[in-house]
Length: 253
Image (tube, rainbow, N blue to C red; front, side, top):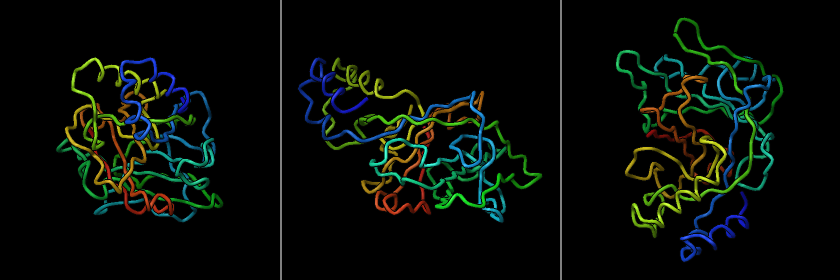
């Protein structure tokens, strides 16, 4: 959905009086659709499978424990180019593996280094890389990704300073329905994070923006975030503008 279409919907809705709030809160987003019928190719955008990394790369670890591969985003695959993302390059994302004795990640959801990223500006000399052996790291079948530009609105009152809707009101329900209509998927880039259970803003501060939100998907990808919830990944706005993915933060809920 684009801004003009959203404006038309707002004008005939129960929240027309809040049009100024909505216009100021709009952020670009990119929906991610899993195409399970497409065959993965080298450097294509995908969840699961194996990462395509430069020949000779080392698999990311923490205290000798290897991370799980979450997926990779080839920014050239994204049709919208003026939304704050790099126009080219491959971003590979890794997540802390589960601790089998505790049933939780080795590095907790909102701790530093729960997410590791490798950004590859040039796609030359890439090869699929397998995780280190004998660590029991699962590699779900790769799922090719397709991207659809859209827009997004805040999920709840904790993500903005001037939230105008009373909990449970007809206006709040109308707003939730409109926000839901903006997305084709639970998985998307940018926008605002979605969650099931948090009573706070999962971003670490106003300088942090949402990079990726993904829902649980046990059947296909063996993803089970928190309690069948969402994984949210954040980056500092200024770092994103520089394609610097050296420090990412995350939360789940």
